[in-house]
Length: 319
Image (cartoon, rainbow, N blue to C red; front, side, top):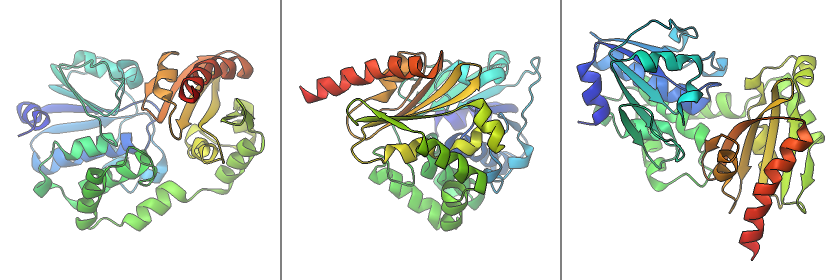
């Protein structure tokens, strides 16, 4: 039996947490664990706490029961933290971690320092892939499989990213055998966009700028742009990936303004730049080919500061 299941079996009340601005892997892993516990241990009380997740994931079991508020005085027997590279990424929900009698982290971010009683940080494609390894595969239902498959496709960019392995594909195949509608999941959560999402994507690409001799590209969406188009942060999904596939580009940077002169930075690389090292230099983290951080200042200062770290890696590669 995995350490995760051992700790679940000893707990009566369980809180499941993920990172701020939850993506497909975060929502999928949290709901996979929640659904599995409710199916296999119906006597236990389990609750998922997340910032309001994108509605495109509403087909997942128990999505409508996700809580986006937190009682700072709440105490649970076990707090399970998923897909969150550090404690600050839990946002206000870290109060639940601090008040829990026991805690465990299950994550796939190599920069995770370990902040719970038990820390399971695995070098796999996604937290959903890690979750699969800690559950009884024979007891994974179609509902749980939909959650796991969703997380895997979102963190592998539908199996295109370098973090995809033969084991990733094997697990995805097992989820398909559980009966998940994989075509619908991919189309509706990964590719399908609303008209305004296409508009803001087009605006970002139109105003993008290439630098470092065409090896890097960046784009920015400011709060005034989001207000003009009537979009939220979740509507910006996919912009950095569109920038990444620009011919001859090694690193793509996408900035979106979250406060006055404060930007959420998303970075992607194609072959050799380790963007997690760049993000760590500014208090962020992530993966070799996908990472992010939050930075203050004007756009040019932010890009120039990032560029110094990126350029150093490019020069080292070219030597």
